[in-house]
Amino acid sequence: MLTYLFVVVSIITALASPVAPRDHTVFPKVRAAMKYHGILFSSRDELTKKCWFVRDGKRCRLFTEAFLKNYNKGDAAMLRHKGEQNVRKN
Image (cartoon, rainbow, N blue to C red; front, top):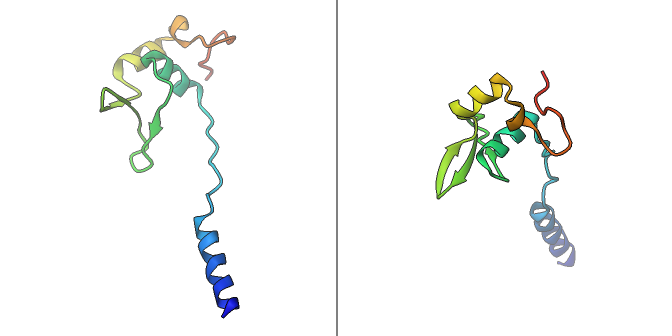
């Protein structure tokens, strides 16, 4: 009886163990978009592969047309990040 109890507890403990966190590397384009929108957190929908953030309770796109226009134009003031000359490197 004690053996069965041990097995059940072991299985429950294994299932409740947290999964190792994924690598949360922030790419330069994402960092520039977050700075453009003035946000600190964004998310990526794994199904549609689109990035978004929440503002005033609404889900907003991270890569808006206005951001992409400035980013593709190479607006250095928008892309500059602490200590970096230019975040965008292709």
